[in-house]
Image 1 (cartoon, rainbow, N blue to C red):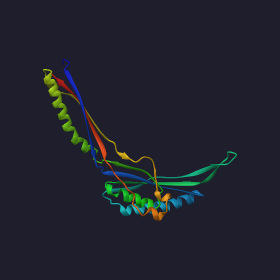
Image 2: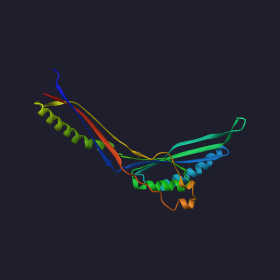
Image 3: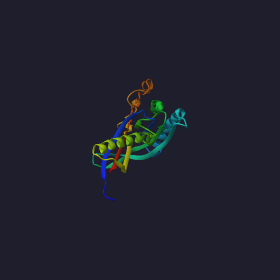
Image 4: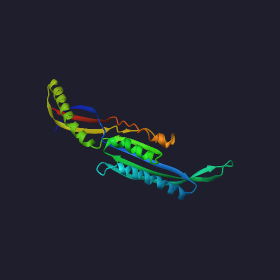
Length: 217
């Protein structure tokens, strides 16, 4: 087949949507004089947090699981440069995944009020991203074809099929920056439980791209 002319076009579209899925990771971090004691104290706090989170959760919308547990020695160095074990640190991380965005603030308050001293991250995403992208592609392809047809007509030609189509789609899921340390560490437990944690989910942006090459004759 002899070489055919080509019209290459691309298009993109961006939408802002309400997130429908959130992930929160809490951590209990404590130290003790020996490893066994550090683990026992951590287990007690972690179980209390897990029970509080499960009391708020639903099997239809929420998943709660332990994602990390570690015990390690903490060293100190004396004036002569000699290292020795100062104490032991235990860390237990619990991840909450929920389809009910309205529960996020309640999960955070429950974890903090029951002993969590770190919130390592909070992210909002779109769980049905592929379906949303599939709804955007057809109108974008149709628009590119109409544009290509107009260009070909102006050049005294017409379209003769599609050489290739490339599509992609992504989101900029919102993630909080850094670690959010529990306000209970800075103020009394009584004061910390007075006001609920203010949470604003914001919007998640989804952007679709289409690149198309049309044959002309």
